[in-house]
Amino acid sequence: MSVWTGRGAARLRVDFIACDGRGLCAEALPELISLDDWGFPIVTGEPVPPRRLADARETVRACPMLALRLEYGPGPASRPQQA
Amino acid sequence: MTQSASRSERVAVAGGVRLPGTLPRLLPSGYTGDSASLASHLARYGPPPSGFGRRDREALIAEVARAGLTGRGGAGFPTARKLAAVAAAPAAVVIANGTEGEPASAKDKVLMARSPHLVLDGAVIAAELTGAREAVIVVHRWVRDIIDEAVAERRQARFDRVRIRVRTAADRFVGGEASAVVRWVERGVPAPAATPPRLSERGLGGRPTLVQNVETLAHLALIARYGASWFRSVGTAEEPGSMLVTVLGAVRDPGVLEVAIGTPVGRVLKLAGGPSAPLQALLLGGYFGDWVPAAEAMDRPFSLAGLTDLGAGTGAGLIAALPTDACGLGETARVARYLAGESAGQCGPCRFGLAAVAGELERIAAGRVTDAGLLDRWLGQVDGRGACAHPSGAVRLVRSALRTFGAELNLHAAGWCCGTARILPVPSGRPE
Image (cartoon, rainbow over all chains, first blue to last red; front, side, top):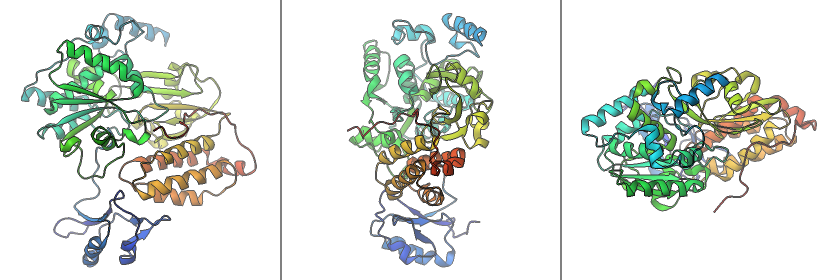
């Protein structure tokens, strides 16, 4: 169930093209972000609990590659990608 | 079967494409000397509509929605929705995607070689529908000459109101992904881009861009001529129309066929000459598709609805027949290694994870590993974790192999393997 934050539920999202696997995010938010076997962040796609939102925003700002984002709204939208 | 074939052939010879219920629609039936010329194209199909006003555009997009046309490049997205999204934006551009980077698939190449003008009609109509002044045709290098010739013929006849530009496609598997096609045309880099922005908002040169598979455009060209009811006169209610399929592996007459969506899988194999050996499994959809046991799939309709509970779909229309003297795990390992090499290398989980998956699958196929636990873990860590569908597509294939051939893991460890025949083409080394 999504948590109402005024703009819809906030979810962490990784831009894997930008991500370099530095791992700062997983250190800062261990209960929301883990690392895979190659050191790249795993985010759940679940809404960030409201009490963790401030920390999540801080972590997004701290990413040296600007690869971590907070997205607001309903779940991941389906996108027409493959032609 | 022969009776219906000869009947449909007679109708086609009489110029009967526009009669409901007949096939083939996209491919000329039988080879004639100039089947690819503009004159014979117009004789077969009649002239395409053009010179659309705003109302005509809206009406035709609504007609495409009624037809239920979906993308034939593998993802199956509703075409009318893409058209409408790009039509709503100014200064659009259309890209006809004939990259077909999948080594096992031939349907787009065959379509462009045999019906180049139908694809060009579709690209021009899509451009007119979206207000684009330019259509870029991205073609596999094998059929570049034919498309060039067809474009020159149209230019000379002043046939189109939009400019047609032709580009040779990137010779890479991932080069066919929509955003990779845009970057290839733009900068010669066949690598997917991150979303957002969506291509319909900001694509080629920052313009709203419609990327559509060439077969989809060919269907569009016929819907524009004959309408939605005609289109729906073959296929199923949920998945109307026909589709091109590439049949390969252990069949007598491998190649590209046009079938009504929902045609039983076994019948499609029969149209390809029937099995040339006892079959154990079928790969359905493509290299991002699914292995299914042959016996379970034979009576199923070749459609999304008909295959979904087998965990499979129609994808880009591939059917590969695996004989009993070939090894499904080994074949999948070879394709997984190829797909790992075809990663654009931009996203960590795809770049490192697919290579790890391929290595583990190779060890399993060689009988050195009997427990799929580590492979399962890595598949979970790669699935859905990239800018494009490449990692997820590869994961889907490998998971289907474990489902279908999983019972063989212990046999492989005991030194048994079903065979060494190879059916899936995998280019050696990456072309530059």
